[in-house]
Picture 1 (cartoon, rainbow over the protein chains, first blue to last red):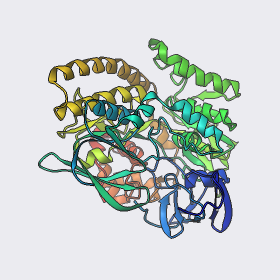
Picture 2: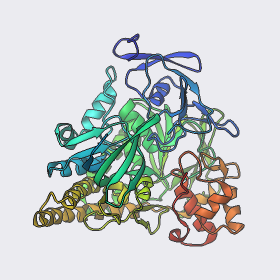
Picture 3: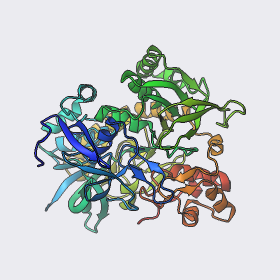
Picture 4: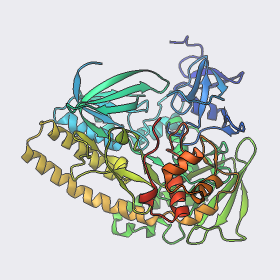
Length: 95
Length: 456
């Protein structure tokens, strides 16, 4: 378990270097949307911005890098205290 | 994990919960496997229940069906949450092996079972239009899931568009959460596009729900327009504007009817497409929908698939909604118990007869709803030369027609030429639109151009 730096109700994390907070227990997608962020991936060809689309783990559009774990589905993975999230440009998804 | 257990139920939505309860109640040892962090599926988001978010907690609690509480107390049922089945195979002894892993992939473990109930549900059917890949454009179901389970919204000024009975509840939920829903756009023209006219008059029990959503929307000043669609979205880093057009009966935009609306999110849905990855891995036979670019698992009256020991329930057998799903879950779970010899044939006959009679009524309503919202070919005019049809591979829309013109006669051939449907999602998102487009371009029936996606 991560140290409980934010107390029982909130977590602190970062997205592309910006420090953010969210209620504990949210998915990465939920935590980013709660902070007004809708895009956290760039497509390999053309660098088009992408964010959440199907919301159920099926479309693989919402891929995000979490620390050194690449291309995770933001709609499924829970955000943790201290997570460093980055815009994903990975070509292949973690499955 | 070691040892072969009785039953695996894959999917913990209404069908899977009912199947697990039925099989568990008949003495079967059941493992319930679901990608969600709690039971409920897309229908009953269990809510994250995180402290400090009353909205999510309240909506979660309101949605809890009795079966959700009972599943937690059922000693016969082991629940593997946040777990996906990546592969499945059945050996000559009839033992089915499921390879399972968490949402981050990594080390897989196996579950070995004698019987399986596939309750994998359905994905939303979406159709491509210019700008549909911009951030802020999501499925209607995604908007609902984010609101129910996370207590968050994608935008503050939004449109809900597409076709089908999901639009009104999604829009009503967003309006209640304080989102400015500019309008709801149902592509099917009035009066068929209005729920009251969708054959529901014969089912009075269904009317209060539909009229309840309509009343909620009216109370928030949200107009519902039938015969309209979002035909394009525009913006740089996210959707900033949506182009709305009136449609003729075939869903072709009426010339001169286009107008722009400033929005920060658009939520679209055109119905459902059964999730067939796992049934296909096990070799289950399918049936093609007569008029929609979707297929479903083929089942007998007891919900046995073509593969012995493999049963199916819920939207994977043809999207029929929550009532059909629950009844099918009970029936499939009962049939699995019968298959394992835990139920006397006479007792099975009595139980299944009752469930099948109830199912007949529920399916009649589902069929009426299905018929009330047919896809119309005019949507083929919405995409432009810059529209991607495959969100993963970013296949340009014109390549589909060009491939057919070049001799590709079915989805498989078009996929090989264009790469459409070969990306991360394995064609889950673009598959129905591709099948429809190939059918239209080739002049061949849906059933003749569809196929199983290439495996990776």
